[in-house]
Image (cartoon, rainbow, N blue to C red; front, side):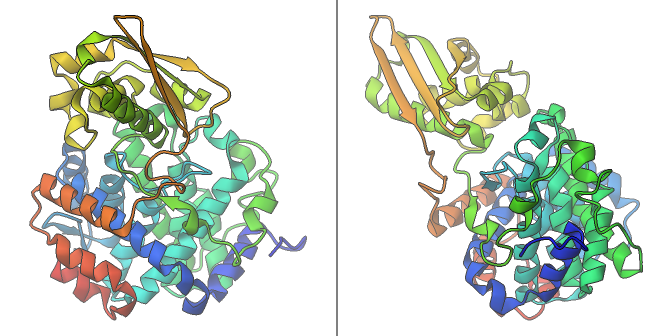
Length: 446
C-alpha cells in the first residue's frame, strides 16, 4: 500500500487500521502474546520501584473512577492514569522488548493503554490482540521512516513514536472509523515528546508513560469529534520535519498489511540497554576462558559502534547509569558471572570490588561493527591478550529467547518484586488471550 497524492500518511494508516481484522493479523498473534508476556514481566519487575510509587502517589489524587489495574500492585486508577503508570514500570528496568531497526521498545507504550482501556470497558482478548498488533505496526513503521536521524538528533524514539502506536491501537479498540483513526494519529503528533539526554534519569520513563496516556487521550478526543491534519506526520510543518528530516514514506507505507513489524520484535535476557547485550555475551565467553584468572586482568577494552560509545561510555553515579554503562556491564559479566536485575541495583553498583573493576574498562570506536555488536579484549598481567567478538547477542533475531525463556523471565521478575499477583495465571491467560471474552474479568482475577 502506497500513499495516494490526494491523501496523507495519517489517512492511509487510518484506512489500514480500520479495515484490519482478526483474520488479517492472526498469524502474528503468537509473537504478540510473547510481547505481552514480556510486558507483564518487566512491569511487575519494577512495580514497587520508588519511581513507580512516586508517580502513583502523584496521580492517585487526580484519578477518576478506579477502573484499571496497576500491574503487580493492589491499587487501581482510571484508564489514563493506569496507562501512564504501567508504561513507566514496563520500561523502567531497561528490560523491555526491542524493535532493533529503530531501537523502539514497542510494547510498553501500546500494551499499557490497550490493557487499561480493555479492562475499563470489557473488551475481549482478541480485540486486545488486534489493536496491539496494529499499534505496534504503526509506531514501528513511523520509526522506520525517520530512523536513524530522529534518534541521533536526541529524540527518544520509544516515546516519540510510541504515542502514535498507542493512539492507533486505542482508536481501533473503541471502534473508530478510518477518519477517526486518522484524527487520533494526527492528535498524537501534537503530543509526541521525549529526549535522549534524559535516559539515565526517571524523566525517560515519564515520556514513555506520556506516550501511553497521550495516545489513549488522542483516541478518546477523536471519538468526541476532534480532528487533525491528515499530513500531521509528513506535512511541510508536520511532526517528522519538525523533529528531524523529511520522512521516508516508502519505509512507512510500502508493504502495509503484507509484512509485519512485530515479527521483528526481540526480548532482552539482561536488564540493560540493548546495545550492551553483545558486550555482556562477549564477557561471559571470556570469563569461561579465563579459568579463575580474574585477578590477573590489567585492562579490558570494549570496541563498538558510535552508538554504543555514545550511550555507554559514561561514569556510573547511580543504578540508572549502570543499566546504560559499558563499564558496569563488563564488571557484572566478568566479575560476577551474571547480569540480572540484582546486578544492576544500587546495592551491587556501589560494591567496592565492582567500582574498582569498572576502572579497568575502556571503550574504543570501531566503525566496522554494527550497533548491536561488540568486541571485548582482555589484557592479562602476563601480557596475554584474550578476545571475543559477538555480532548477534542472545535475545536477538539470530538467537531469540524461547517462549520458555520469557516465562522464566516473568517468574524471576515476580520473585524479585514480591508481588501478590499470580505468575502462572498470567502466563496461562496470555497464551489463551484470543479466547478471553471479557478483559475486565480476566484482569480483576489477577
